[in-house]
Image 1 (cartoon, helix red, strand yellow):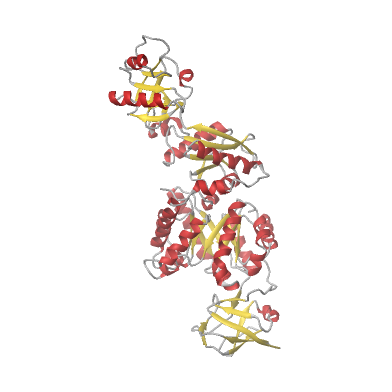
Image 2 (image 1 turned 135 degrees about the horizontal axis):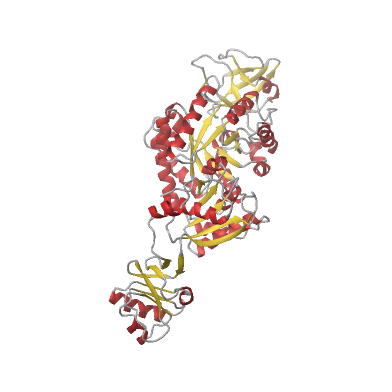
Length: 596
C-alpha cells in the first residue's frame, strides 16, 4: 500500500553508503536531506553521487534537498570538553575571537554582541542553557546563567524576539548553494528565514546560477519568521516547520498551534509543508520510539502535512532503517483512519481565481462521485500536481512529466506518484503513458475509471483548463455489479420475441416472464434499467443466481451502445462490458504501452 505523506531522511555517517541508501528507499524514503551545517563538500559529493546511483538502481524518484547552514549565531572556539556552567555564573560574551573558558567565550558572527541589550534572553544549545544579559561592557556583554549545562564549540545560540542584523545568506551559504547547483539539487531548504526578502535573495541567486527551477522551502525558526509567515509563504515553494529552533525562539507551548496554522495555510495555498525535528528522536539510541513520538508523527498526518522529516535519527542514529520503516508504518495507520471526503468537502467553500485550481477542484469532486481509482495530471513544472494535492484526495495523483527535475521534485508532494516519460504531443498519447504506468505499478487495472486534467494547449505550463473522465481500456458499458464470473461471447439484443440467446450475452431492458424464458440459455445477461426499478433488479438477480448466469444491472445505454454480433467480455464483479477479450497486464504492457 502506498502512503501519501512523504518521508524525508537526513543523510549522515549512519547511512552514507550506497547499500544503506538503497535500504532507506525500500523502507520508504522519498527525499534525501543533506545538512550543510555538518560535513565537507567532499562528504556531500559522495552522498550526492550515491543518492543518484541509488535512485537509478531502484528506478524511483528521489529528491535531493540541500539544507543550508543559514545566518545563525553559534558559540566560538572552546576546549574539546567544553565548559561546565552553573546557576548564577557570570560570563563575558567577548566581541573578539578567543578560546573560551569559564570567564569568557566568543560567538560567530562577532558583531551581534554589539546588538545585545540588558535584560535580553540568551539561550544556548537549543535552549537547554538559559541566561540573561545583565551588563554591557566595552569588550562585550555579560550574561548570567540560569541553569546548569555544558557549553561547547559550535553550539547554537538563540536570542528570542531580537531583530539581529544578520544577512539572508552568509558567504558559506552562497558557496554551498553554488556547490549544490553544480550537482543539480532538487530542493533548497533555506534556514532561518525571517522575511519574504530572504527568499527573494535566494531565488535571485538561484537564477544567476542557472537553477531557477530549484524548489525553495522556507524554514520557519524564529518569532520574526512567524510574524512574517503569510508574506514568506507567498514567495516560497513551501514551508518547513523547524520546531527545534522555533521552540526556543517562541514559547514552547505555542509550537503545536503554530504547526497546525502553518500546515493549514500551506495546503490551502497549494504549497509544500514539512514537519520536522525530534519526530522519533529517541530512536537515535533506542530500537523503539516513545508513545509520545508516535502520536506526534500521527498528529502531523492528521493535520495533513505534506512530509515528515527525520534528522539525527537517520544521520547518526543506531537504527536508521528501522526508524524510517516505523515512520512509514505510523503514516499508513493514520492515513487509513483519515476521512478524505470530509476534508475535501470542508474546503469546498473556497473561491479560486485561477482556472487550474477550479479544474483541480472539479476533478477531485468528480473522482469521488464517479468512484474513480486515480487522478491523472500532465505537468511540466509540477504545479498542476501540487494544486491537485491541496485537496488531499483519497485516490493517488499520477503526475506524468517529461521534465526530469520535476519528476524528482514531485516526490515531496503529498499523494503524488510521479511518472517520467518522453515528451508527448497530445492528451491521448499522454493518457496511454499514464495508463500503462498505473497498470504496471498496480495503481489501476484495465477497465478502471480515472479522472484526467490537462490543458487545451497541451505541454504549455499553466494552461490546465480541461477535465476528462475516462476508462483505462475499451469499456463499452458501465453498470451496477451483479454476480458470476467473467464471460467472453457475442452480443444478442432482445428486441423481438423468439430470439435465441444460447451461448450469447443477452442485452435487455425488460424483465417480464416471457423475456426471462428467452434468457434460460444465455452465457451472460446485461439489464438496462433505471436506478429506481428495484423490482426488475431483484427479479433478474433471483433468476440469474438460480441458473448461475453472470449478469449486471443498470447498464445505462446498453441497448444502443451494443450491437448484435459484437464480441465482448462481461465482467459482473466490476459491472463492466469490454470490447473483445480482456488482455492481461503483461499483454497490455507488451502490446499497447510505449517502450519508453
